[in-house]
Length: 414
Length: 125
Image: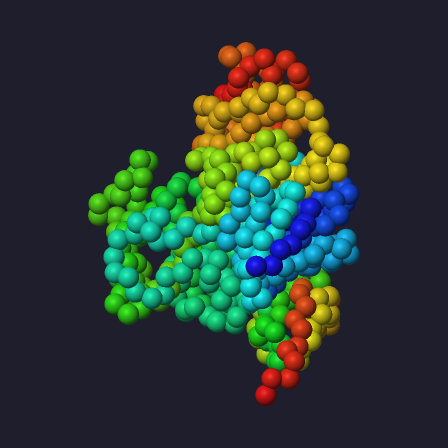
């Protein structure tokens, strides 16, 4: 067993891990190490060859690999150490990480840990699509890595289930690579990806978007041969007689992402069932002191820009806490999602000052108000000209000392 | 006068911009949250442009492909032509992020630029 001693260990070298490592280093932490199981840094970004990254954060529209390169360079300049091709197996409340690579097993003793383990794609088994089990069914991100990294074309006639961003981007990618995209099938009455992707990836290429539809049958013995799509009613029940058969040799699934927290669970970190990520405070600290959660393992972000902004906040705070002990703490109050709200992050607040609350609404709407209540008393509100579950809502909220006389505050949409 | 609705794609918010078009004159009615949206809507109606991102073959590299983009948005109708032209190219590793692969692609004034570094693999016979 190899023993290593570090000040701060970041698990995951994607954008969230890199951004938090850089901020921690900038706030004065000496030994920062980023651990990643891949041979490269940047996580999923190198396969996201389209542009649009960095618009909000740096005011430039970069491609995924360029955005990653920007952070990798900065991390290298700051003297952050990397352990690539290293798999973290577990860690414990004493902040000892067990990891393995070609050279053997490691115990990495750290004073602070940042979890940046990313997310996974939902599979056919999350959507419970009936039919046979042929080859030719891929999650959108896997197909993206095949085409963009390894020069493997998964098929020639494609149907995409789910209108998440990766699915929309792949509809364009397949079209540019000469394949036919027969359609994108979405169970909801609206696209779940960003509007710009609906415009640039579907409308530009006249790819049909079947809203209020789902796949009700997969056919094919060795290879997928066709899918049947059916219309659903407002309760998402399949409307009999609306079936339409579409021949295809490939089915892509873009059903959404789930935070990946298998490593967090080895240390029994408290997980929020609503986000699938860790329960955190306003500085992204989890139920284990000096352990933080950032990026898509905390909550699935719309854009890498906002993800990096939060990861920097977390890294900065993790660093400051190590260097000079952090800010004054109060008793912990809960932040609870109320009417019309699917989830909120952070789930708890334990200091005064400015905090940013991220949340997702349940359904689209216009001219509404977000309200923060403490025991039915309204303490904050923000007008929302429009809301959409596909767009994460962010609101800055100034926490005053009086809030700590309550046990919880509730966020609701009126 | 024609009323046109444009979904802004400059940033992820996706403002729904409403504009009036009379001949080649565009008047923005509203819906945009920033100035960039106004410019985008006018351009999108008169001269729609797109960034092109695709990949190019690389020989003897750590990856078989290098991702590339146009140095600036190009006229929408040129997108397919550019992608097809990129298919014909094969580079020799190493390729550096920022390298200019093709100048003035398809007569658009835009260059094709590598967006990642692909190192060469050490001689493995």
